[in-house]
Image (tube, rainbow, N blue to C red; front, side, top):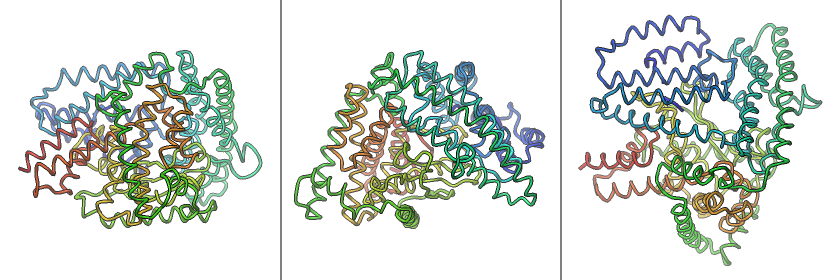
Length: 616
C-alpha cells in the first residue's frame, strides 16, 4: 500500500462522517480541522513530514473505492477501484514523484526517532512499488488463492456493510458495475498472456468452478438463492424497513443487476479461462516465465526482507526439517507408538479420533472448539504481553462458494472504525483435512496471540502515519504468526502430546515450504516432485498437500517468509536474553516487537539491539 496527506484530525472526521452516512458536510468539517493545525512554518520537521504522510495516504485512499470500504469510508461506496493500464502507469508516475518529494523536501537529520523510522519505511515502500511495476504482468490475476473471481464477491459479502438505504443502493450499484470492473480485470489477464505469463494448467479448473458456483441458484437457475442474492437479501432484511414494497424493489433491482452485469461477466470469464486453459502448460515454477529467475530473486528479497539466496533458503529448509523430525520422534516415544515415522504420520492422518465428523454438527463443533481455545488464550495474555488489541476476534467457516479452492485457514483484519471484528477463517470443506491436533496451533497463529494480536495492535497504534498501520512485511507478519504457535508451548499449552505434535507438524510444514518453494521456482521441480516431498516428510493428508503445493506455485516466494521471520524473532529474543540476563522481560521484548507495527527484518533487528542498549 502506498503512503497519503490530510491531518489526523481530518482523517478521523472523515471516517466518522462516512461511517454515519453524513458525507455532505465532510468538506466543510475537513476544512475546519485543517485550519486547526499549525501552519507549515510553525511545524517541526517531524510534524511537517507526518502531515505529508497523512495527506498522501488519504489521497491514495480516496483513489480506491474498495480501500475506502475497507476503512469504513463510504464516499464512493457504490464504485469499484479502477484497474487499467493507464491507471497503473499513473500510479507508477505518482510513486516516482512521491519518492522525489520525500528525498528533496524533508531533512532526515531534523526528524525525531519515530519519524525517522517512518521516513525509512516510506522510502523503502515507494522504492519497492516502483520496482514492482516492472513485474506487474507476472501476478496471476485469476488463481485458486486470491483471484478476483472469488475476491470480488467475497468483498461484497464481508466488507460492504448495509446499515442504511443508501448502503443498499450502493451494493446494487456495485452489482451493476460488476461487469465493467470484470472487463478491466480480464483485459489485464489478456495483457499478461501477451507477455508470456499464464498460470499453470491446473489453476483453470479451480477458477472456472468458482465462476460457475457464483452463477448457481436464483436468479440464474432454480433452487436456493445464489450466493450474492442471499447476501443482499440478508442485509436488506437487517434494515427492518417498514415499507415492504421498497425492500422488495431493492431485491428486484439486485436480481436484475445479477442477470445483466454479474452473469455476463462470469460467462465471459469462463470463455476466457477456457481459451487460456487450452494453451497453458504444466510447467509450474517462476523459472518458466520471461526473466523468471530474476523475478523469483526479486520476490525472495521482497518477501523475506533479507538478501538470502534461493540456495541458502533451500538448505535452511532441509536443516529445519531434520531438526523437527527429531522432535517428532520424541513425541512418538511419549505416546509409545511403535513403528516408523511414516507409520506414525499415517496413523495421525487416518485415525478417526483426530477428526470431527463430515457433518454440520462436526463443523459446528470445530468452530466452537476454536472459539474456546481463543477465549482461554485471552485470559492468559497478561503473562506475556503489555499491550493487547481492543478489536474483537470472531471465528467463521470459509463461505461455501470458495471453500473448495481457498486455503486451510486465514485471517481478515478488523475495520479501523470498530464496525467489523477480526476474522479467523477455518476451511471446513473437508473435516478430514482439519485434524483436531492442529487446532491449538491454528487458532494461535491466525487469532491470538498471532495475526489478530499483531495486526489489530498495529492498526490501533497512536502517533504513527496511517500507511504504517495498513502496510506489512510478509516475513515479519507471518514470522510473528509462526512464533505465536511456539510461544504458547512455553506458557504451558499443548498439554496433550498429540496437540504438541500438531504444533510441530505445522512448524514442519513451514520448514518444508522453504524446500518446496525454492525447489519449484529455483531448482525446477515439477508439481509432482513437490507434492511427493511434502507428502513424504509431513503428516498432512494428501488433499492438504496438493492444495499447499498449488498455493506455492501461484505465489512464488511467499511461503518462505514464515520460517525465516520466526527464526529471526527467536534469535533476537535469545540474543536479548543473553545480553540482559535477569533484566530480560518477555513482556517488554514483545512490546518492542509489536510497538512499531510490521517492519523489515533488518530494521526489526536494529530496534531490538537499541532496546537492549537502553535496558543495560
